[in-house]
Image (cartoon, rainbow, N blue to C red; front, side, top):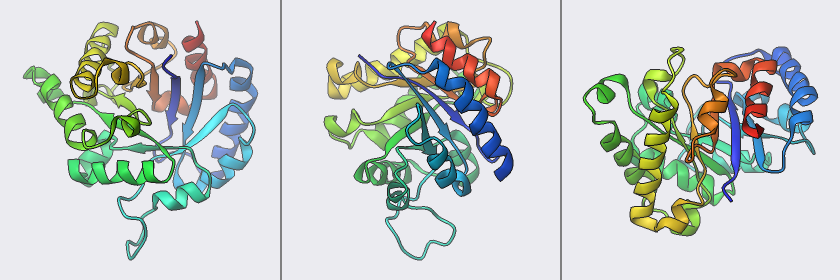
Length: 254
């Protein structure tokens, strides 16, 4: 059975005191909704990783980083390596978020190396893929998403691929308040799973969790999570509000 995952991506938000307060609220609320079939993750800014890891130790909430370097170590000022994250016992890391692709020009080859670094250091990559509005309007979204996955993940063995979580995020629906309809989400998730199956076989493809990311909120989560191939959500703005994020977690159980 595929793991159900609700992951919050805090992006570059919250100061240190606000971050601690939000985690405290989430621990008081999400813990009551904890499920053996749903994994809850908060991907927090780098300066807060250790503190949040300590605050959530032994609890149902897991911690993730928002990025890692493709390098193991070296003269890369400002970068954070996968071995550093492993040394803090961080279990998850987001790879290839659309904002990293757009603002930091991360290439397919670079994301393949980041994925390799994460896997080599026992981190679970949450690998993001998705199309901007102009690609969707040209009806080329399936082609682009297949390309993104193929170029950065298809070098992996079947065993390693099964350690990856994929997040489909239509870029036109991130932070815009727009959301892909449940049918649009299901259609793309099915395309992704079929593309994985074309390379690795149906058994492997059916074992991989695929999350939807793109203005997930308490109002639309249940409908999205009810889709056959949607295994959870990568939640942006709503993850910064304890009650709304908790309601999204509850929607996974409904």
